Amino acid sequence: MATKNAADHALTTSRRQNFKKHFGANWQVYALLMPAITYFIIFNYIPMYGVQIAFKDYIANLGFWGSPFVGFEHFERFFDSYYFWRLLKNTLILSLYELLLFPLPIIFALALHELSYGKFKRWSQTLTYAPHFISVVVVVGMIVAFLDPITGLVNHIIEFFGGTSQNFLTDPNWFRHIFVWSGQWQSLGWGTIIYLAALAGVNPELLEAAKVDGASRLQRIMHINIPAIMPTIVVLFILNMGNFMAIGFQKVLLLQNNLNSETSDIIATFVYETGILEGQYSFSTAVGLFESAINIIVLVSANYLARKVSDNSLW
Image (cartoon, rainbow, N blue to C red; front, side):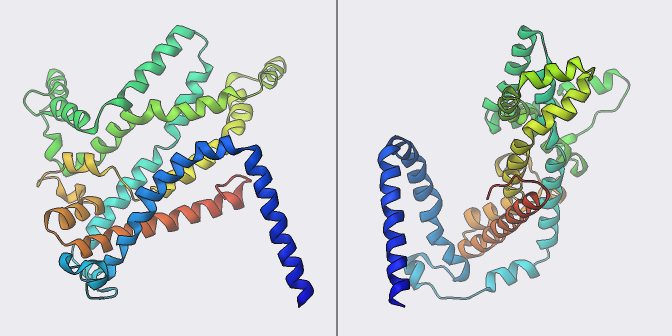
């Protein structure tokens, strides 16, 4: 027993010495990490202290510890409510819809990478990056202006070709398409940056050798470019799955109205309405915690499957 304790103590001392040596040689890297670590501790970890009110009947003047404990009462209330399945269904459909379009930035990056005309390539990149810097409020304002049933450009085009004006913004069947495709327009160019950076690391000798062997452009893309960026694709896919239920709350809220609420009511907007507008802090925290729990489960599952299927994963 004493020998084992001595061995453990020696191992701990050795690890401590190795860390000090490594820290001394790379202290600049640790210094660069500190602002990011501090940010996450202050804005992500410390606020987790307040999650406990999901299991309490929170009363502000009693504080977190003084409020009475109610266990899973708020979760049960949410699961038993008549709007639970509608909120869950709408959130899942929007999330899956966005997930189906995950390959679009990859395809666009591969297309840009194959462009040989430099000016057109730079112009295309600038044109597709620009929408990323437009605020959500401005984007929604543009959508409302373009889709207005009387003055909107889209309806003018429809009427020009003999069609009938449509009120897209109040039709529940159009909400999901408007939300998802406007999001793709805004984020497509920005999402290609990482893939273009990964493609820049492809060995040009492999491409030249494949060209000499008679491989077509499509074959070079399929057998050289895509395998080269596959680790990046897998990691970004896993990170995307970590936000599976976290749909763009702001844009949904701005596009939402009483007529399209059938498909626009999601968990995030429900948390805002019950927590901020109605002051049901414990109940809204419980609903938000339920959403976060699903995100964690999906993230861990996606990482596990990626590790089983390929050699690439987050951990």
